[in-house]
Image (cartoon, rainbow, N blue to C red; front, top):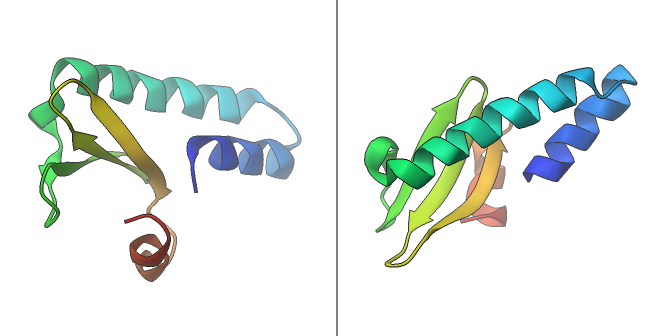
Length: 88
């Protein structure tokens, strides 16, 4: 899942943008923090790929020489096998 899919899911489930807006704000704050402190996430087995966890979500990102690339935002309540095949 990516951020758009997650926010759309909650909008449809709740029939309201309220929670989606709150979640979007929270995750974007975490991404801004990554922009300033790229090394705060936990290193994965994949070189230069780290994970920052925010509540039920993990932000997978890669540190590149000139920027930080968000690979995916993962809902930790999903089957982890889907993550390996689909995203990484």
